Length: 159
Image (tube, rainbow, N blue to C red):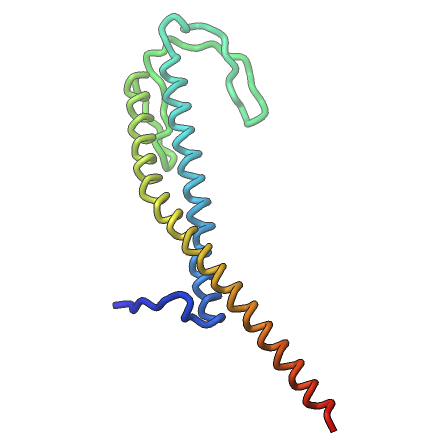
């Protein structure tokens, strides 16, 4: 079992090591942002499929060919949609099934975000404390070293 040590009792190198370990926070922040982005894409997809109503059949729309190229197209009767269900697999679903699929995916990601966020906040708070203690210790060490240097120089100037 790991032993708990008050942070102000750690040496400067130990504090730096702790900070390096806490820096995984950047990875967690990036992961959290990615989860939120994917969650938003699922919600956008759900909203888009919910707008596919029978009265929109044969209406004109822009079909993306690339991220910057679109062609004019017409909507087929929206009784089936093809959904990317992951890892290169696609499934035909009714619009209702697709909306449910996207809702479930978004809810799953919301739960994952809830799991990651508290750990991130805790690590951020810990990083703040460790950084403050490290800065204080470095300041004391620099002051002590300057005092020792000044004392040595003063002692060397005497006959």
